[in-house]
Image 1 (spheres, rainbow, N blue to C red):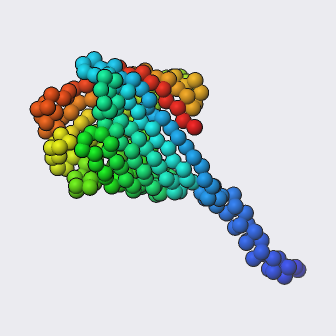
Image 2: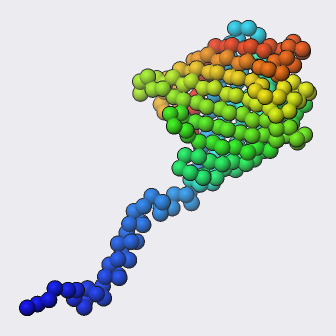
Image 3: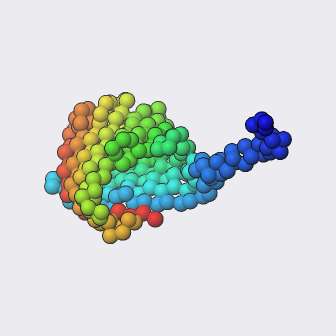
Length: 247
């Protein structure tokens, strides 16, 4: 009677077959692909818009950002601000950041920010967390430390609601905080400013979308008191029209 068992040939071949199986699985894994070594570029004008204020001055506002890098490491630039139609630039900032992917949907970043306006201009160190949270499109949580040692923070959240494949409603909010009072910049401690937005865009293509909407800005707390002392607007609602694009 023949006894069942492994043949001498199979005993010699099974380590090679096992190695072939492991390497084939690894090659098929997305983590094993060399995409992280490739370099890409991306530029997005999140907001290029005219704000027609219901009370106060109209402004042209912008929020443009982009990066160069791969899946794990990226060098970012970002600029945003408001230019009064009947006067000088109200506020404007530029940032340069290095980010590192720390989870499938989140990046940690460090960098620098420079405020051209308002006067006096300031430089800041930037520490940031950027990514996608459940049920929202994009989250930016930034902490800033100025050259004078002042600490502040900003939280930006956006969410997209697909009404159709091309028509998209985007609610958003932005909260600004400060640890110390900075009188020369008219910023008080605690929550200093709130901005709520609602924009409706039509995507002609994925890369190009005009939009309309409404934005409400409100200075709060001690920041509002400092603004009133110099005759600045505290409550600024505005209708907006603009264009959003990326490439």
